[in-house]
Amino acid sequence: MGKQLLILFFILGSISCRHNEIPKPRGYYRIDFPEKKYRLFDNNCPFTFEYPTYGRIVKDTDRNAEPCWMNVEFKQYKSKIHLSYKPVNKNISKFIEDAHTLAYKHSIKADAIDENLITDDKRKVYGLVYEIRGNAASSIQFYATDSLKNFLRGSLYFEVQPNKDSLSPAIDFFRKDILHLIETLKWKN
Image 1 (spheres, rainbow, N blue to C red):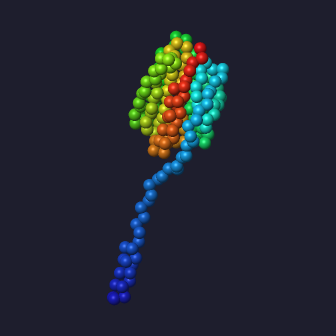
Image 2: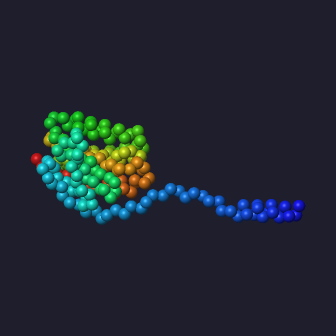
Image 3: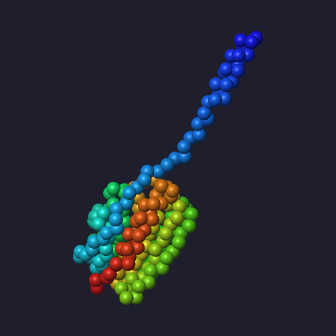
């Protein structure tokens, strides 16, 4: 009996001394972003703007793409800002409604959608920036127009599964680039 009791105490002592492992919470990779520097985009489209030097302009190759549709690609971050231009011909309200509809399609996954007004009388640039919070496919969208001849729409996309926690630093980083693009947008005509 004494031997059995000693073995029982030994087993219980061994079990009680074991560390209870608690799994680590899932972490995300640290992303190092480059210094903000910009260059001018100026080609045969009826607008110019500044875009980041760490991005590159690539013509949109979708079969439905129009001549001034393009992407500012950031390959190293698996992201892009899609830009689509439309000439206005008494159809500005349709373009604005389409932009609004496309932004609010994300409301199913969004926690909130904030709208920020764009008004610059000097450059004749007016529009809205939609900040879509949550696990939506596109977290920032915008449109800009002069209300008479030009309409430009943009959207930020990542080539990964949307996760607001892991993408938050990248969204904040690219938000500044989108705002800079809008602040430097000029119509040629």
